Length: 264
Image (cartoon, rainbow, N blue to C red; front, side):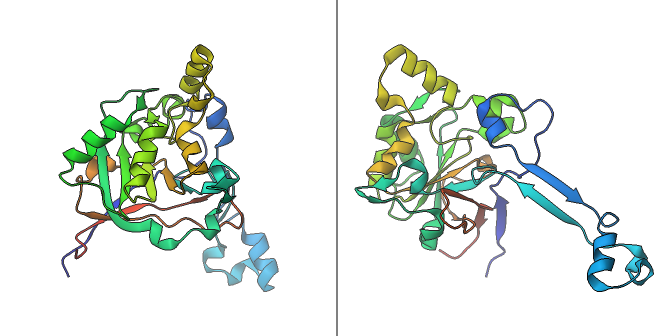
């Protein structure tokens, strides 16, 4: 077997960094991590084992962390239950009910870097981006939308300013047999301030969370907050993005990875 190359497509789950906490979304998805180091745990370790500090190597215990966060924090997979209670008239599936084969497959990167913050990516732009990859979309492929949103990770702009798909573009991708679509932006739809501004101007309810709401009629899965899509070719790699099995949840964290060099 040829040597495999792994590209990490995930952003870290971490406490907020200085300067990035701006807006409701950043606050709602902030991770709170409490760290306990090898010294702080000594009292618990000695009590647990009934030993003395001198019995521990260099008098040290273990390191642990306690994390409080949303299932939508960090790189994660959205389940249909997130979008709406039903899909095509039936109860929408939660993250623990999704098929694992939907999260391992041939990847396709669509270059959408020409789109700026708040812009809607329409179906014509998606068709052009697919054509640029040299082949049509195939059933079971995992489509990754590259905006280069991860380049502003750790800033307020990361949370508040990014493009997103229109409902029509989302339907078109899913209608090609694609079940899983990822983005390197915070969210799959464009940023919330842009949606709010457009709705205030047009009063059109169809603009509200339009890409997510496609899940009311068509079952599909989203990967949000990806990274390093710029390091991938348009085709010729495999994606693994298995979500953590959180019972009854609308999402699950994922360590998304691209693998180059697998036999095809």
